[in-house]
Image (cartoon, rainbow, N blue to C red):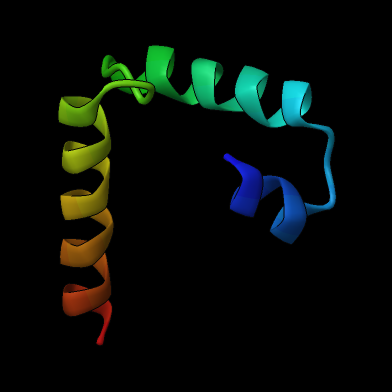
Length: 51
């Protein structure tokens, strides 16, 4: 969260709210280890497919 706040130049509550909205849209909990793993794997797969 801290890294995202710094990279995006947003307040931590704004980043938290956006993550919550994204998680609801995707149907996963981005605050827990399972959701973070799923999101990380999805991003890695996308990078591999786009590469």
